[in-house]
Length: 249
Image 1 (cartoon, helix red, strand yellow):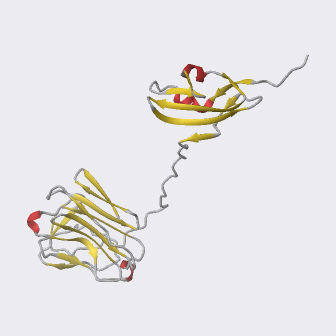
Image 2 (cartoon, rainbow, N blue to C red):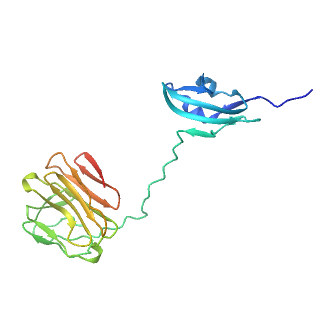
Image 3 (cartoon, helix red, strand yellow):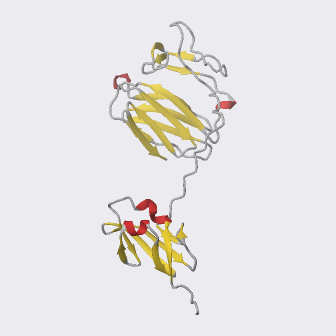
């Protein structure tokens, strides 16, 4: 008795199993409808290439090409897939240790005390005008009228060339004037600032040969905001109350 090569094999299509529990999907094997129950069990198929399509209504969700050869008992991965499977995202880069700030003013202290940089990297701030103190989110906060300011001497570590991060809690008021700086450094080869004006908050940075930042509107004044500028990241974020807005450079 002569035995010829088999023309069919009974195979399990493992790659489709994760779709079978969705009742909104329909399946087509070689252009013929096939039920999810049939695909969940081993199915007899001719040797050769096959096409499996998954649709939701008339919308094509997935299309698989797979091969059944002599001795094939299961197909774990298709030979081709459309749209292609999305590879798992790489975990975000996390610094092993966050660099300490170059300057950090908490504004804590008595009314007659100088405003100290708690890092100790620079001298106490020079006060211009009637800068005062009040209760803040974390400890005390500084209060400024229209022409008030705190300034510190420039030093080489403030000369950013490729990256800079500025962060501040602020609560500007429309009655305080047309706008002003929150924190920044200007008039140099490297310039950066967080500021506010009648239209909202501005995020600006200019490294040697680099671009300026862009603005972000707010809905109303008198809101406590945490304003952050991070460069060279391409996205800048400001949180206004419970509303978060994004702007890309």
